[in-house]
Image (cartoon, rainbow, N blue to C red; front, side):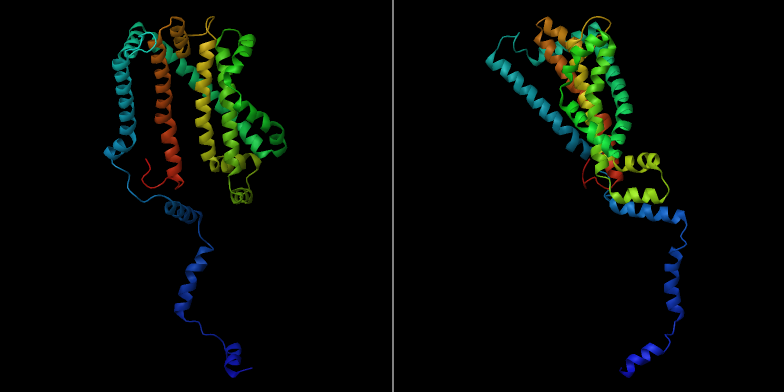
Length: 320
């Protein structure tokens, strides 16, 4: 063996004070307090977020609000030009002014306020009940594989089944009461919420489950405190789809199930205009249904989704 190599093996290595100082910070990490770990976690989360400043109010208006307004105005102009040039029968092709007049008449009579209040109350209450039912059911199916294999295909089939198909059966079971409307809403919303949550749970990284288990979380706490928060993107998507299905189901139930003790909703107003052959009233009610759906999306689900994505660092730069 060469002498240089032998000397390295037998001679002690001198440790200077500078070397000890460089080792001390590494040792300090072994006794780091939980608060320091939380600070480290916050710093890592900050690395994932977009450091750009929030866009100005004017930029948000020009990029998010103004384009839909311009598009709607263009449609109205094209609609009015068609009426002026083609001059169709008013009972088959009412003008935009006729539709606005129909909305004004419904407002003056109080029918519009009553219909919107009734439908929103039914839609929101039915959707909240669907969330209460669908969330634990979705977690149960996502965590218990045999149960998922048995019930999962049925839930997927219920999601693609048109909600209007439940209306005749609901009328026979519950009669012409509000229970019929709520049943149809639940059957339309619950499958979407369940499938959205299952899809979100399937995308949870296995490492998160292992960390929760190491920290002592049981199956219930692991599902509620680790799996569900990690599955929020898929869960929120399921909630959005669940609201869309509940609103559509509500309109179908209100159009078909009229009379009895069922209150006067937007669907009832649409069916009433159809019976009177009032096409302007029909179009006005359709636009009202569309406007309510868009308003709920913009006022509730869009901010919720943006906030969730921003906190997770998934919001693209420049997104509103």
